[in-house]
Image 1 (tube, rainbow, N blue to C red):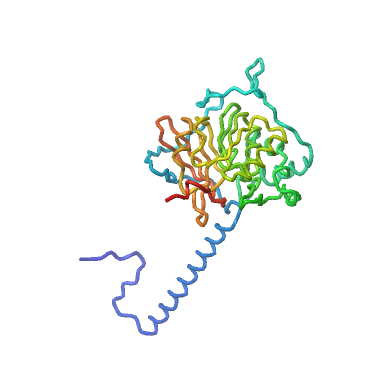
Image 2: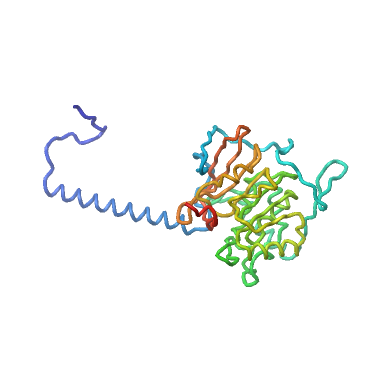
Amino acid sequence: MPGFIAQGANTDSRPPSGRACARRALLHRFAAAALLVALAAGIAWFSLSPFPAPNAHEFQSGSPVLKGEHTASAPGVLSHPENGPRAASQPSSPHVSRDSAGKLAWPRPRNQERQAERDRMVDTQIARGDPFRTAVGNARVLEAMRAVPRHEFVPEHRRSSAYADTPLPIGHGQTISQPYIVALMTELLEVEPGDKVLEIGTGSGYQAAVLSELTPWVYSIEIIEALHRDAAARLERLGYKTIQTRAADGYDGWAEQALFDGIIVTCAAGHVPPPLWDQLAPSGRMVVPIGGPFDVQRLVVLTKLPDGSRQSRTVIPVAFVPMTGRIESP
């Protein structure tokens, strides 16, 4: 049976000499070794770096695994309507009111301490793009990052580094995310005033506080009871009165409060927990890191279409602490 000859290939049928074969074998071994070293270095960089990878611009990808469910994926990306009615119902709250024009009002505490550092953090780390990251441009998100006193959400001995361009440990093997990542995930969620938002992984409470600058209805779940207790007390002390928290396994979501216009997951999941998908309202968005603790994780935006199917968009590679609890069951 005749074979195909690649363009530019050597068609000489004479066998090569023994010396030529030895040279070729040596070259092949050297090339293979160099490739293995390069791959190992790349994997190590992605696994250990807390920052987005270089040239981390948005690109389309296939849908992440939704365990136990198969859904169709449609082309394109849906966005929330800017002024249309929200899918999730708005609960009543003694801390939330509306003015004569129907505009929502709720308590958003203001802390001027270290304001200059917050402004510098936003101007240099978040609002300014560079080859390693895309700038966050949503004005409401930038104002939220300027308003929330990040130093109040880190341990006392870490406060000098509160506004540094890095994640910080908060105890119990958990971290407060890098400021840029907090701002980026918040922007990707496209929160409108009046949206109901669920956060999985309260941690220190910082992400919940940022979200509460955008909408009064923020619900946050933390699986580590000590972290939940400290975060709830901190949010109360600082005056964030509309954030509701609970100590529970985030895999199951918060069914009593569903549906949610947005769900943000601040720990890496090997798959999208089906209860979270079920609790996402039509046209709602979920922002979640997908991948195991030793994998190259992807920050993914999922949009729920009216028919229940999903659209998926991968934004950047990231490194998050893993989700624990029920998700670890085989």
